[in-house]
Length: 135
Image 1: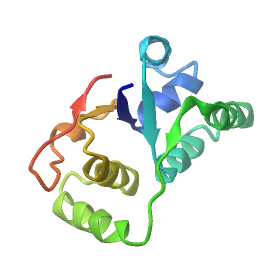
Image 2: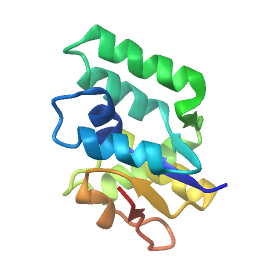
Image 3: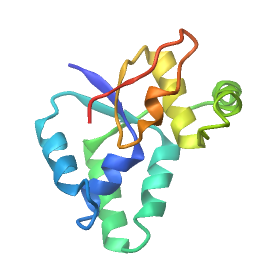
């Protein structure tokens, strides 16, 4: 089964009915067949952005707990690549969550992401490849 990365934007939209991408996020999740991979920094970003409603935060975390996402662990060695990404793309700028996704893409040789950000067309991995945004 296919695995792709997912960034915070579609996840926030999925649990925020007022988000302009809410319906698109619902349609995407319903239609996607495969595994959605993300990192703890992305989870943190989503819960922070959903801080307007504790029920939305809990709903999101329950969805994750039930298997809505697969979490990829980062270790201390990954910080070297995260720092390198943040330095390389400091003019964009690249944040911690985005850098963590790029590290996972490199480690797992993933080529696709679901994101509302256009920055993933700018970011390049160590093979000089960008992630194809399928959202």
